Length: 206
Ligand SMILES: [Zn+2]
Image (cartoon, rainbow, N blue to C red; front, side, top):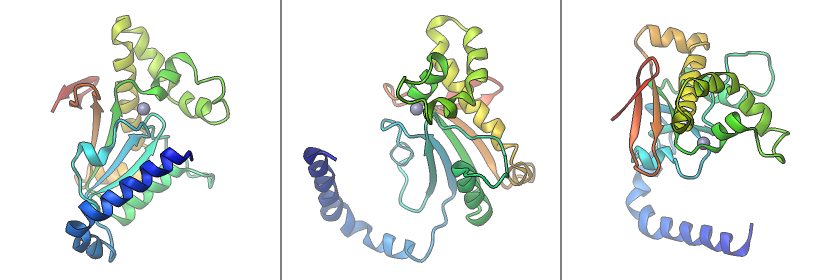
């Protein structure tokens, strides 16, 4: 961490303590006894699409999983290391969230890697990670005009993640029982607009 980055983080923490903490202290003290978030969010790690900011959420409201390209891999209980699935299991079974949101976003580098290949120096982890969605993304990309490819691919990843959520039996069961709602979203970055998956292949502005 460079000195200027460290300074920036330290300055941010000081602002948090002086400007935010006094008003939020009681809330945090109450949260120390446990969390009860209403929503689990699967979002991209991208620094421009922060769920807590976009949903203006308070601490304790969102249980957030972030990864490259907001991907949910399919249900695969094989005792290997599945970070997204672990968060889903805890969020759904223990925290009993009532909604799971998958939020994609514009200009996603992970989706770009699906379309054009991962950066040369990111072959160990990024390349195989994004490859899980490459067939779905390329299929969609071939069916639209060139200027629509990026958006269509980002939306395809959201749809794929929602489909994969339904491969988890305890998610599908809760959804069928009406206890869990699955929502697909896309954040525009430049226009700040959230668009929701409103049917097969269709997103509309909220
Ligand atoms: Zn992204």
